[in-house]
Length: 317
Image (cartoon, rainbow, N blue to C red; front, side):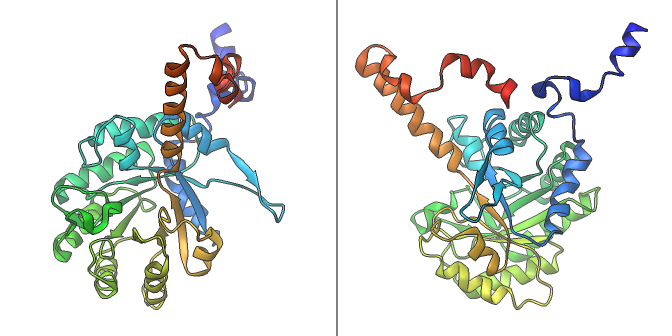
């Protein structure tokens, strides 16, 4: 009887850190991104690379000048930050199992949907298995880029060789992924690398139409330029598509543009793709250097959390 009564205790009576991940199932989480998109507003996401960064994404809010309170709508599992946090280069050397383990760490402490950076997706046969794996754990969408060969981060631009994939081959990969998925809600998004590779607007538009014809659920346009003009030019042309799909943008370099302006030009999802880990590294490096320079840690006390706060951080989150 005692055991039975334990299972009748309302979940709200458990500490927040015990029950935080039990309020949503993998199926509910997977479906939640499409539900948010149906609201017709732009959605903002931020990269997470650990359980701790996921807690930040889950709970952080801010008040804007108009009085509204905003938070992040979804999580972004970045290949770049997932590699960086392991001390490895962003060349697809962190395998899917390792990446999915990080996803599950984030899911343990959050309820928000996740979009997964699938790099090139690999061969169609491999991508099919990746889709099934991501669906099973509750990821809402995967974004794959239309490049081939050894991966080079897109922000290198033409400083590194960026080889575009054959359109027909990439379309077959999309079709294989769509055929493999079990749920209707899971989404596959094609990331256009034509502007990154210097192939121009016409090639980007041609590829967008081909991938939509192949069955893709969304299009992501990518650019390394600090000026958003080429992204805006693409968006204007893309808005004329009769069979347009939701558009994803990643304003890492052209970050002077607001989410509102991107939304007004047709963006459905805005991803802040690597800022949390870029904030963490210099902060940790500064603390390490200060300790080395002074032979003690007293000088950093005003720049770091008190010990008692870190001990209770997860309970408070």
